[in-house]
Length: 217
View: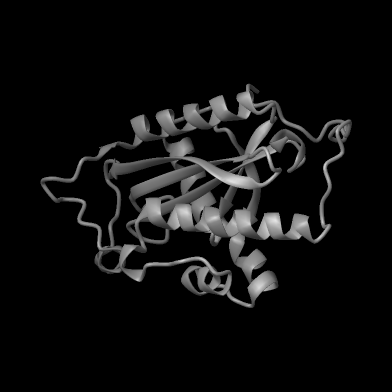
């Protein structure tokens, strides 16, 4: 069913924790991808989370202010982290497998301030010459805009609370926690909109010709 819900795209919730705001120069320190699916009741739900701590790429910039904000210590001796190339190869493969299994044509990135996360994802793919980036190159779904419309809130913690979801500030700024909370918020808004009659599945509906992009292209 999810293959027919978002124009043939699989929504994948991404959160990136990084060493600054510049996707080209600043390190990715953590990344999480939450895969979604539609359950037997027709509700969009979290399926699985893929979380990685990342070794900064050679020459990466890391701002001290960013480390204070996230609380991440990239030099901690007990931090289990993996090279950026390995992380993105594994994460992209998991997403491509899910895209194929659901009959979707490609993934579409969902994020809280999605443009920010999308920039870092695309920069990493370009840095390592990864040709099979599963995400649409520029389209994304932004929960900031959605939450502003639905709840009058743009900050993730406040939007979650307005939606009736728990949010632990002490756990925030972990890629896993923020991605899962963003996923919960996204699913709630999509499901509530559907319950209000905003979307109905059409079994024989096909995407318009030329709009889908095959995941293997």
